[in-house]
Image 1: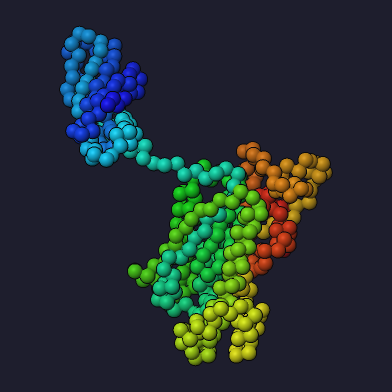
Image 2 (image 1 turned 180 degrees about the vertical axis):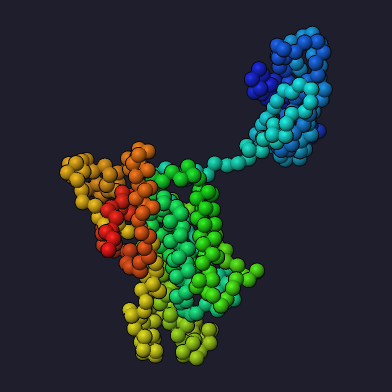
Length: 404
């Protein structure tokens, strides 16, 4: 069976080699014109890197004797094929990634090893999609127990999460909004964001590492009597999800806030039954199994005199982080425009964003840096929140609030 390999003038592979799958060897031949500056007896070497072995191999010493054609032959070991393995599959997996012609001394380490770049994979996220990076605390049940977080909610811990989230928003002006509850936070990049060329791995790792750094840095401000200990340090994981439309994005945000309400109502009832009702964890779980919201509210009110609607909004609704502007009145030119800067047309169909010039982008960054980043605890499911803050989805900042 013939496996295409070899080397032509520009270093690409051409000449055929022989694959012997049963013997576990690859025989190859290389043919190339010698450089014009060579004369007499010159010693040449060629280096070949094979993907299947991910190694570099010297073909051996070869000499030029008056002619202008350089040839090299060699044999490389490959994995043997068993009787039921497909030869075509082997041939697809086997490929020469890097070759080079060298005179005299061996090539530099960069040339020998740079073939490994071929193993990297592109992870650019889809264009014109809203990117949500959600981070979650790893092992926070154990972590919160170690540092004695209050149940069902610890205001210090939640405010620490909010402080770290604000710092991330400040460090990354490409973020338009964030939403957090318990030990999780969701950060949203606008759909025309080009940060890191939209590489998912870089976006996620930057968010996670920046958030973790600020969480640890600000820990002592919220837990001064409980210094962090080795073996019990906070860590977070993260993932990136893409949403193609504003409706998809808003549904995601609504889902997280609805989940906040459901979990907080359960936890508030559960921990009051244990801490104030004097029953065990197992008994509380059994009694709450299958109950609906109304029944949990009744338990809280009838047994403990708690009106759930009077609980702090941060516990019930979570925390929303965004840049605060005043709505900028439209100019006559904008009113007469075609609406291309709007997030949605009058029919509700989304319009692709127009690409900003460098000067427009610089102006946007300048305004974003001056804007105050605020934390609110409010309903983001209804339209009011978004309609009163059109700059969040349009990525077109409003007027900065007046000072004083």
